[in-house]
Every structure is written in structure tokens, then in C-alpha cells.
Amino acid sequence: MTKYTFEEICKTIKTDDGLKLKDRLHFHCFNENGAVKAKYLADKRINEAVDAGICKSGAIMAYGSLSNYAADKLMKMTRNKRVNRSDLNVLIGMAWYAAKKANEFVDAKIEEMQADNIDVQVSELYNLYMETIELFKEANEMPDSDKQKANYIMLRARQKANIVKEFKKLVAA
Image 1 (cartoon, rainbow, N blue to C red):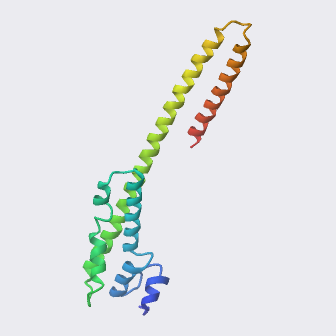
Image 2 (tube, helix red, strand yellow; image 1 turned 45 degrees about the horizontal axis):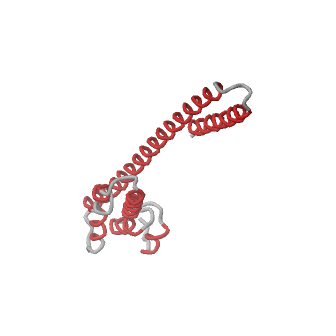
Image 3 (spheres, helix red, strand yellow; image 1 turned 180 degrees about the vertical axis):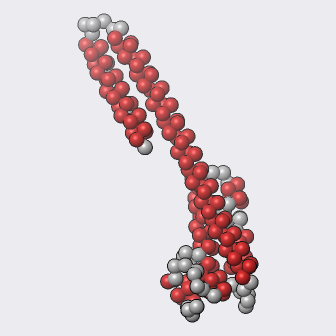
């Protein structure tokens, strides 16, 4: 095992492979690639999702900053002289699991919101398309000599083409 300085543990090391227990604890508490940082980033993401209205505020209790047991225990463990291997392994696993669950929750809510949004857009476009078809029928029933009829039909044809273009964009997305 290589001896690392505290700065190396906190800034340059990418994984906790080959670290002593205390160094491993410091890695997961203070390094950008550690479990505590991952949990805090997940908390930030949950808070942003709640602020944006993607999910309800209860998500903060279930997945966010009010659910930081493992991260808090890891930070308190840094004050101890000795580190218990099993406690450390369990708390690191719990912190990673909490971060993973929070990110999965936000991802699922975003997908759900996007699916609902697409359904609403498709429904609105369908209604607009059907309204345009009705207006086409109305235009065709106008007297043939009416100049307004030609303009009206041209306008509805453009509207129909725009609706079809929007449908294609939704299908491509």
C-alpha cells in the first residue's frame, strides 16, 4: 500500500483501490469521486427538481437532504481515531445506494413529465388538425366565384402543412 498525503486523497486520486481504512474514509468524504459528494450532488438534483415542479416536496424527505444518514455518519467517522472496516463498508454502500436511488427517482420523474408533455402536444396537434380539416370542408362549401375561398383554402393548406411538420418533429424526438 502506498502512503498518500491528505491533499492527494482529496484531489488527485480517482478511486479508493489500495487505500488504508482512514484514507478510504477521507477519500469518500472529501474527494470529488467519493460517496458523500455523489450523495450531495443527488441532493442538489432533488432540490432543483422540486423547485422546478418536476416532483413534490416529499422527495426531499425521501431522497434528498433530509435523508443523509450514511453521509452524515461518514463525516462524523472522520473525527474518530480508529475506523471500523465493516461500518465503513456499510456506510459507503449506503451512501452510494442513496445517491443512485435519488438519481433514478429524478430520471423517472423527468421521463414521466416528458411523456406526459408529448401526449399533451400530440393531443393538441390532433385537435388542431381535425379543426383544420373541418375548416377545409367549410371552405369547399363556399361559392366557387369567391376570391375569399381561394385565400381561405391556401391559408388552411399552410396550416395543415405546419401541423404535419410539427407531428413529424414529435415523432422524431
